[in-house]
Image 1 (cartoon, helix red, strand yellow):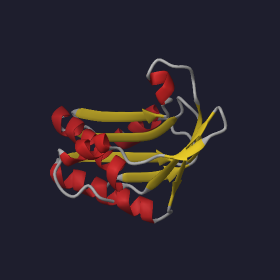
Image 2 (cartoon, one colour):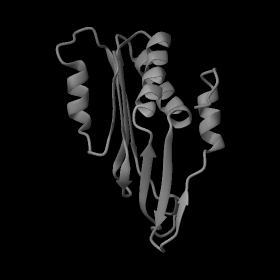
Image 3 (cartoon, helix red, strand yellow):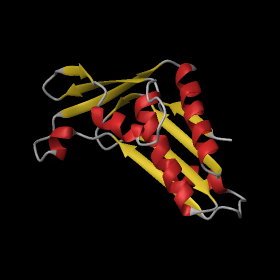
Image 4 (tube, one colour):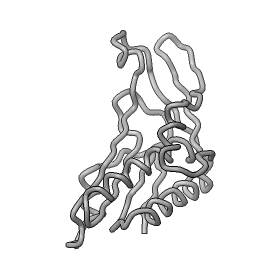
Length: 160
């Protein structure tokens, strides 16, 4: 059974992994993805330009969508468990935004499930992102073709 949380509060990666694996002796591999807020200008070698990223969601609908994604991962791979935590609200560069942890008896299943989970989260989970820039501008973030292409490698319809 997957642990799914959408929250404003920060999370502790080590504590989440410990909670997922506590008392388990059947786990041989843990896949983990930690996503942080990125300033694209800095990533491209420029000066900082992102002041914050605000994430909005529709409570209830978002958690159900993530639960469906986790259930699909559990169907495809023999997982011992998985955790998906996605933050919402106003986040600044370098703050953690998403955590995906999948564990299994074998590393490949854990790693593949982790990649699948984050790829499908990017395209199927209903989040809306608004970037605020240091110069006062603000824009809504459009879906990226690269995210659609990453999700497509797993097959199935990647639409939310």
